[in-house]
Amino acid sequence: MNAPLSEIERLARLRLARSENVGPVTFRDLLQHCGNAVAAIDALPDLAARGGAKRAIRIASAAEAETELSKLARLGARLLIWGDRDFPPRLAAIDPPPPVIAVMGDAELLSRPTIAIVGSRNASAAGRRIAGDMANALGTEGFAVVSGLARGIDTAAHRAALATGTVAVLAGGVDIAYPEENRELQTAIAEGGALVSEMPPGTSPQSRHFPRRNRLISGLSLAVVVVEAALRSGSLITARFALEQGRDVFAVPGSPLDPRAGGSNRLIKDGAPLVETAEDVIAALGTPPGVALREPDPTGYDGAKPFVTVFRQFDDRARDSVLAALGPTPTPLDEIVRQSGVPVPIVRAILLELELAGHLHRDPGDRLSLV
Image 1 (spheres, rainbow, N blue to C red):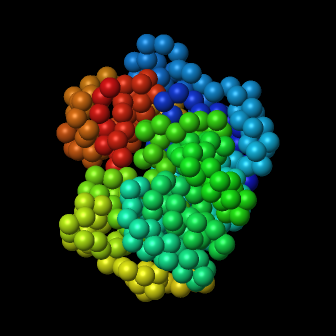
Image 2: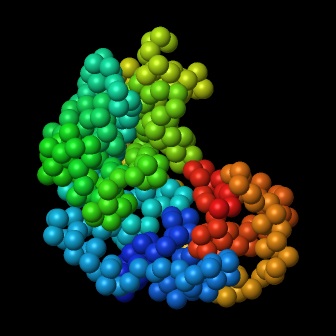
């Protein structure tokens, strides 16, 4: 087991996570190359300048980080930081892990066997009933139910699992009720379950936050069950994240005449196991809730290679080759490596500089494009 993080390092990791242009991939790579967050923060200005930044990068101050921690404490919430011993093991094992998460309620639920149930906001009465019956039965069997607190399927699943344990992953801060009609339900989950968010308290949910929320839903779960999802829906994004993370994806079939079932039916055509009840899910999962599932060891950083060594291994020719492989169209990382002919560690270092400078955009699946 890793040694606990010092308070200095915990605060530095929060500052790093809240600094400009630092997402989960950049956060992980900075720690890998620098060895710790204190050194990473010191390196940010130079790295951003090397990437072509036109102005100084905004680095979250220690006072801002302390203010966030104080707000969470007043709310009765806590901040879990990647590298801490109490960071949820399933989230620590995904690549990359979220740098920090705020939890309001029972954080122990995050380490229990969990199943995600997601689906259409505009759900049918039958879909809501299926989701509720499945959530209730899974809870009775010892599983916690994870969802995104959206209207429709999410709401039905959360309500049915309130008594046995449910986790709501939010796109905004843990103190922001969204949607407004679920304010009472969100309060009930905070008291009897757990609310989880990557965002600072007071953050109103925006469209760009929802993919990160969906990634946490799947990352916290052993499996994702999709109930009524259109062909273009956030539920299918969650399913894709689940597959990338090595999670099982199950789907409830629906009428081919109902567009709300188009996405879930497509998942079944593509090979997702068809499920109709909690018993089907448990049987397909193949592991009862009382049996511990071992996650792969989290991808850590060893700090063995000095930061300056990594970034002095390439010159302008390598940078130009990587830039030539990039463009406005999102391109997978392995394709950038193939086209540039530059070794992977150096490509990652160049991409890190470009992202800190605000010149790189990352789409889900580590697809990259120039801004």
